[in-house]
Length: 116
Image (cartoon, rainbow, N blue to C red; front, side, top):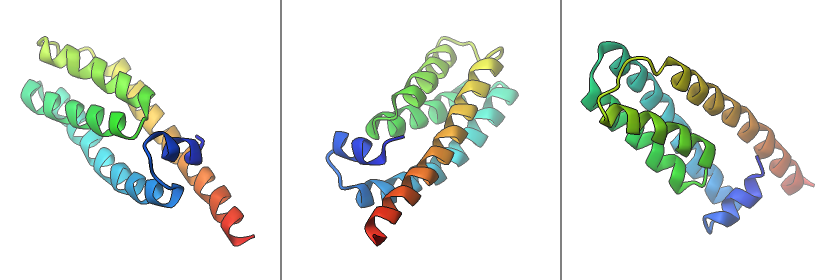
């Protein structure tokens, strides 16, 4: 993840993007848990709400892979398919966790540049 590039893409300074990303990470973590629970319970309305939330937040920050995966889940759920999306959920969760790791690395690199 190039934090500076992502920040520029949405018209923010890297520090501003970092602050927003931290809020995004907290919210998305909760949304992923609730999405998984809703899908396990067969609750299409709640699953749509959570997938749509992840999709919107990801798109707003230019995190297009997460946007596309959550959109695919949302599209399926809105079409009535709540079960059988475990593979998509696994991919979404793995991509999100990878993104968090990349963000941490990128933040440390930027912090190192600021300290220098």
